[in-house]
Image (cartoon, rainbow, N blue to C red; front, side):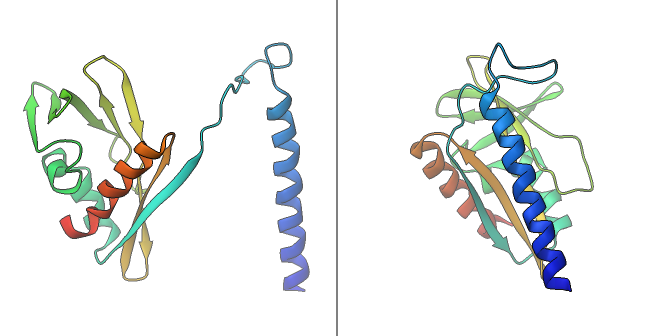
Length: 161
């Protein structure tokens, strides 16, 4: 009974995703309806994660405290400072502003980095329970260079916390 029910749920999800995918694949300027965005490019993506021997709450508080940024994201910058209401990270590319998503109870640790050019980069991050510890993850889309930098940054998480 459970196996049949599970098979029906999986089949429903597959069919639903296939139907939604065909709508998205066929969406273009002439077929996109109100509220639908045209998708020009889908970048390859890989979710990077690390298991941490720490509670999700402790990981969340550590990562979302901007003062700790140099401890877990060494590739971004070696120092961070408060400048008025903003947090500034001194990076090899120059000073960049960083802000985190509003405090939440869902483990969302997204942050936004504003480059010297003014472009804002969204960096999605999550922390979830994993047994008596946590799993911190971040998807990385785009070039192999981006993925390589993200891997180095995420691999530094567990040793920093």
